[in-house]
Amino acid sequence: MTDKRSIPSIVEINYLRDKLIKWFDVYQRDYPWRNTNDPFRVLIAEIMLRRTKADQVKDVYRELFNTYPDIDALANAGDELNGILYHLGLQWRQSAFRNVVSDIKIKYNSKVPETREELKKLEGVGDYVAGAVLSIAMNKNEWIVDSNIVRLFQRYFGIETSKEGRRDKHIIEFSKIYSSDAEPRKANLAILDFTAIVCKPGKPICGDCIINTNCVYFKTCLDNRVSV
DNA sequence: CTCCAGGGGC
DNA sequence: GCCCCCGGAG
Image (cartoon, rainbow, N blue to C red):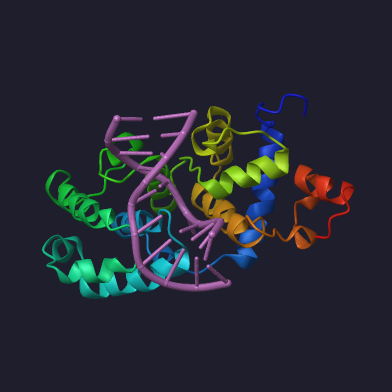
């Protein structure tokens, strides 16, 4: 690829997606917010997941919905809610959290908005959370970009990004094509899990990687004789 | 010590 | 475009 900022071809992206989905069918992670199609629960989970490890969110999610089974219970929650959320860190999340619940209940009649534009009006909801709710809970063809997805794109296609790769135009364009699939939910979950388990930041498992034959990063490792 | 399913304020 | 938000795990 001569132009390092160009977007890979649709064929290349389709190939990558097919491989990741096949991998996902075997190795997908199990989290409580994946056993529901309730957009509200998925939205709450995604808000908690931002800048926070999934394993750290798991227990909080369970306790939260055991204590407050529906949006009305959550909207009327007292100070105990702060205690449940405390372990997530990022204390600003607590007020944002309450505002989101309140807005959905009052402004949206207890129904999670179904467009990216409306979702982003909620406090603490940006492109990632909005895209995740639309694609994962509603199975819509909506893109997501997080730091892990940026990294996979960099490594696999040998593409350059800015410091804020999440917001790079060519990265978002890639993600739009990637999520243009018959199963956007699966496609997006697949790339999230793959980047967390195989193509992870510190020591990626390149040796056992199912897509290493086409990966620029892997070829570079071999050229440098770095053990993988 | 660094890192983590980002977002918002500037 | 840059920077900070911050608990817990490694």
